[in-house]
Image 1 (tube, rainbow, N blue to C red):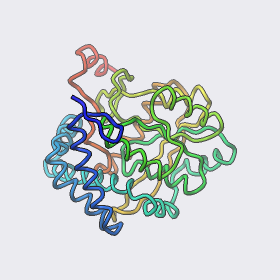
Image 2 (cartoon, rainbow, N blue to C red):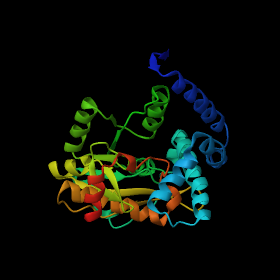
Image 3 (cartoon, one colour):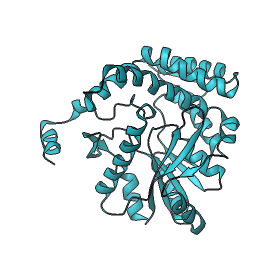
Image 4 (cartoon, rainbow, N blue to C red):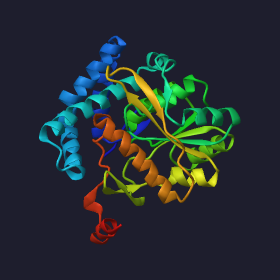
Length: 307
């Protein structure tokens, strides 16, 4: 069964979910910026995450990769991971108020000057981040400082929600390239002209390479590394790290990943994200089903264990 509203066709359940989330977002946006960010974090942590099963997903992921983690720490992360997710969502929807806070962000790390040189010489760059901190902060901050950054995004399954979400991320900066043939062609044109492209690939990829993340086998897309090799682009890990006040950020720019094989480069990206996540465990999106061990064959498990 499908439902059509405003020219968009989707599932009735998705329509209801969108109505609820849209109403919550509109209510939050009536509040002053700092109050809305804190309030949305609290609402996600204490109401939405338990009801939607996100808290359970966080616990299951932690049990899988870090089974010796104390129960008190698991409980803290169930709360704080959801809090960060809620803050991130409303920040993305805060438009000009969010963008205004990007102008004073500090760029740190060994890749900061390298990235500046690439901008000035129009060297193609693939910026790689994860669902960490606020994953739109690096893009927003770079655009605010004069960098030509486009972003590849994966349209959401909930088409009703996707419509206004894409508008929200488009307000932060453009161009945006949806996954698919047309979006991919536009992205390549931008990259080959010396632009920068933002990638997120810390989600389960059904046909991805079987690489390691937190010591467990994780299907991982190789596309970012393959593009870097094909177009001689820098492959730079970059993160928007939320600060202790829960409202401000710094942008951490790592040194470019050396060109080798796509698998080795993608593993280096996984290792980089794991390292910064271990420093700020509550800032990675443990709600994702990143590993899906139930889909591994016995042969794959044995092959991974023997490496």
